Image (cartoon, rainbow, N blue to C red):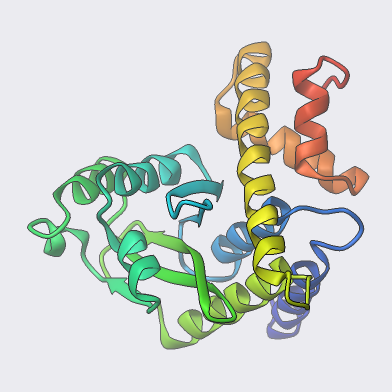
Length: 237
């Protein structure tokens, strides 16, 4: 890929992120754009986003594969790991070699290594003065992302979280909570649709989600709407 084409592709990513909540799209659509852009434009092999509900509990809302979901859920289940830590303190956290943190986060390390992931970085997602979640990115080999890649990821997460909050008045915090809850509800429906399609097509859940995403992108509709159509047997993919 030429340098010019890469710059054009990156510009499109930022346009997609900025526009992802316009025209009826959801938070979950924005976060899907974010994780897909992450593995396309950096050396990260996997990425996942977690968001906090009204009670502060984290939930996976977007991921590049079930592999990254497993690692995130291991962190959420034990309340430990780089993404949980980045969410708690609001700062970027790098893990150049996951084995190096085995004493601190043994369950995270076990799941990451079993998934073939050897390094990680966690970027908090912050809206104004509030951290609403985090994005974990993973590499298959020990090492760290370059400074340029980290700046790019922070820029993309910044745009993504700005687009989350559209309300600009005193009700902003309530509006944010409502948007996050809608994202969590949508995730449940998407998981149901993934399971149905995986069974129907005798394929993996990652391939099932690709069907949902491709249909949503082609028809410029929400991921949630596609998933609802599949679950209700109103849409055949």
